[in-house]
Amino acid sequence: MNKNTKIYIAGHKGLVGSAIWNNLISRGYTNLVGRTHQELDLLDGAAVKNFFDEEQPEAVVLAAAHVGGIMANNIYRADFIYNNLQIQQNVIGESFRHNVKKLLFLGSTCIYPREAPQPMKEDCLLTDTLEYTNEPYAIAKIAGLKMCESFNIQYGTNYIAVMPTNLYGPNDNFHLEKSHVLPAMIRKIHLAKCLNENDWESVRKDLNLRPVEGIDGNNSEKEILKVLYKYGISQEAVTLWGTGTPMREFLWSEEMADASVHVLLNVDFKDTYDISQKEIRNCHINVGTGKEVSIRQAAEMIVKEIGFKGELHWDLSKPDGTMRKLTDVTKLHNLGWHHKIEIDEGIHRMYEWYLKN
Image (cartoon, rainbow, N blue to C red; front, side, top):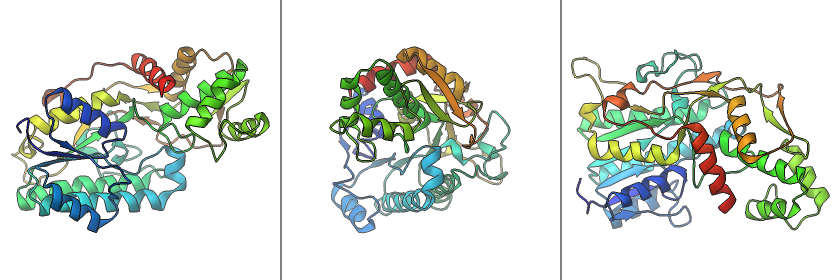
């Protein structure tokens, strides 16, 4: 792939897409194409076809998805399966019809069974029952990677699927209900610290940037305290879901981008499976660190980074989700990529970014 190759990045304003865009720019790839959701609705098949007709990209990165944390996945189940299937169907389908030479599909390690052996190898896919809370999203992502795999086998395309572990970083979504676990904890603990220090200016600034249920910095203190309390945020404590004991692996989003671009530029479908095997399957690639911390440990790191003087409480009536999720990244290492940023440094970087944005 040369530096002038036209590359379409679906989801280029999101957590991963924006990082992939910046990574490609830093490597000298400048012929990049992106559209915001307002400019191109990826759920609209006709609009996606028209876009591909006009732009004729040579490579595609499918980083657009309907995403969220455990609460959102459990509540908005239909949205997670329908929207993701539709986005994948439209983008992968038009990529095939327009002879795209290389496609990178981003999935998630939630595709693996709840009781998968740890660390999770790629070949444990579809060997047992999925985690209930995010089952619809996982099924959609499994369909996406199988679509890539099947097009490659039947038509000789070069579509690669990567499965990132839990991501965090710049441009993440800090919605108190719908975000990933780390940004949600960072925002909750930040707001609790502001309340603890009676720093209403910072509370109002935060809510003006990211209103909660229609409540922003212009509302009364009573209204603000009421809505924050609903999400477990008070002057004295932050209440988080579950027991805090589940183990999680976290990957800095800019490193996920670097791994993704490494795969896009250097890995072909033939590199993702054992050619001696009769059946071609599990060709996706885990992307992670191969290291883990508990949710409680991560929360305590955030408390220390932010300087919150209150307490952490755990709501045992809420589900924990999968108790352990650690990827086996042997395939990725063998393909030439290793992570560098550890969780404590990543939390520091993310909080700094949050305060500036």
